[in-house]
Image 1 (cartoon, one colour):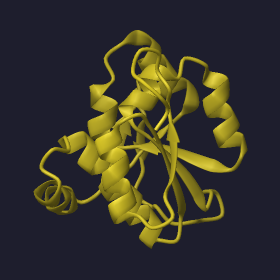
Image 2 (cartoon, helix red, strand yellow):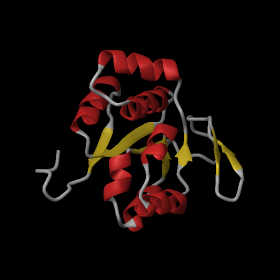
Image 3 (cartoon, one colour):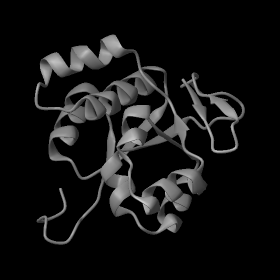
Image 4 (cartoon, one colour):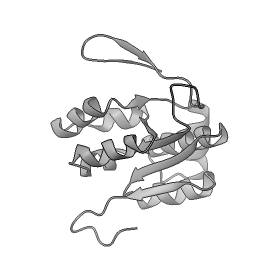
Length: 152
């Protein structure tokens, strides 16, 4: 999918496999990860550990607050959209998932089957369960938010 930046540039983000300029590891950010991680240092450390930072346009479109939008621009996240049919298939088997969450599962599955080591940053229990069903050896980084109970 192409994403237009504020400067009007269009970025193409189609290849999910390892290339010379792309890491063989990817960390997919759910909107909850963007909302609750207020320290860009944490995200930059993930990137410094060799992970590509990616999400889907459905997730990026959920981001409304200024801080999270600024974080999206600061970390230069890649937007990769999986096939809508895959998202619909995941939704059929997991009707409680939102379209955005199903897009994360579809992207994680696509990347993992392409040989990419995949992790997801989220606090969404339903999303975590679906990820564990669809993606073998998925790494999940959970966000512990005050007042929402224990870390998952």
